[in-house]
Length: 373
Image (cartoon, rainbow, N blue to C red; front, side, top):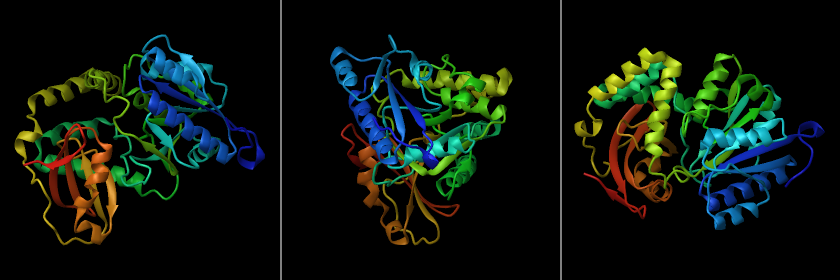
């Protein structure tokens, strides 16, 4: 593991806490990327690998990595694993992350610099591949108004377009940021924290089995008036949906965590209203039938291809297109198929704020794309 001088020749120690559950191959790649980036940046780095569950063979693989192995004694959830690692870490700068994240060169130093500069938390710009083909969206805006609009967007039509416009402004504010941006919409896939902020705000709430633990923590951070920053020059790859792909309970955990967060953030009445609307509104799939392949529109301006797994069309990954590429966006299908799990996806070509065309594809278990009528 790398040891060296931080910014301005001052020693800097960073503790990377990787919370693992039955994904040893991902953990091996994540640890290698961390070690390589720290060595190149001259950072002192300790890596703590918190094991929430694996078999004997996987444990031997994990114990052989250049990381301090911590046995959680069972699946404590992401929050529990993160808290265990934070308690054992010795650095003043903490990095809590999933095993399906690969830091790209310079990521660690740039995140650490923002913490040194006064941010209580910082997060990177995420791509879904090392070629930086598609930008992954920032965390969704968490306010009662935004969540109410998200529920209404299930109706499709004008509500869905309004939701996409609001989300698009939020996403592009992050995607196009030329410098660090004050934002609490950071992803828990990789989150850099100052230790004194953790001591002030408190640990991650372990009542969240999975999902929303970082949303809750960042919400508490914002309520205390402490700054968080999105750092576009710090780049990382998030191998989207890989660490939870084999967990059948993931969806139920998401719903339970979402409900818990809404009750805390919006009160019991706000949560009941959102849940009542969700039950009453029909699925948007029954109201729309996008074509299976795009027309070849003439388009100009700021062009984006958006890819969404949600029937409302957001949140979505985004790729900025040249006018030439916009004439044939199907050439990006292999890059899309290589990174997404099986399912149905909506693709949308957007010029500025204007939605030009939408179409749908399906991915099978082998990630082979096929049109959907």
